[in-house]
Each structure stands twice: as C-alpha cells, then as structure tokens.
Length: 140
Image (cartoon, rainbow, N blue to C red; front, side):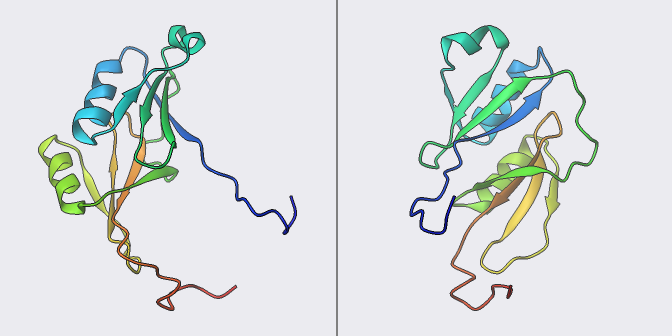
C-alpha cells in the first residue's frame, strides 16, 4: 500500500463469541436490547451456528460465533457502536439488567461501556462533533 492510494480499507465486520446453546440469550441482547436486525448467514455457515446482524453502518456486520473458550473476566478489547440517544441505550441496558461502566471523558464523545451476556465488552458512544477541528487532537 502506498500513500497514493485514494481509498481507505473499509471495516466489513466484527466478530464476537458466545457459548454454544446460548443463541436465545444472544438474540435477546443484540435484537431486543441493542436493536440490531438479524441477517441470514451463508448456507455453508448455517451448520456452524453462526449468527450475523445488520448494523447501521453502511454494510458493517456484527458476526457472532459459538465458542467454548471462556472470555476474560474483565476484557479490554471491545467494539463500539455509535447511537443517537445515549440515555435511551443506558436506560434500556439498565432495565434489562446489564451493568454500565462509565468511561473516561473524550471531547465530543460521551460514552460508556457494557458487556453482553457472555462478557464481550461493548462501548456505546454518541458523537457530537469533530474533536480534530475543535483543536483537541494530540500531536504526532
């Protein structure tokens, strides 16, 4: 790749895991609590137990795959979803019994973290403006 390339790579999907047999809890969280829509998987993936979701971000998908490997108790790796109403998501997660962890403040990006039922860490953010044009970007 060179500096003359005009098109940046595009994020196509993010994958998280869940314990086999927990498909109902997975769908309840991602569909009923967060509001994603399930997307049919390719025929070859159906026997593998994969579940995919549409997101609001121009084709970026959330893939979930069954895995027996336990997740760390307090993970730091995560994915982030941008929402239009942070308080609505905070309330929906709290009502559904999910823990909220407040996050360090970032300019123009109020946010918090939560975990899905399987301890996948999720950041929830509302982008209010461009911190770079506001002079909040770190130098080199």
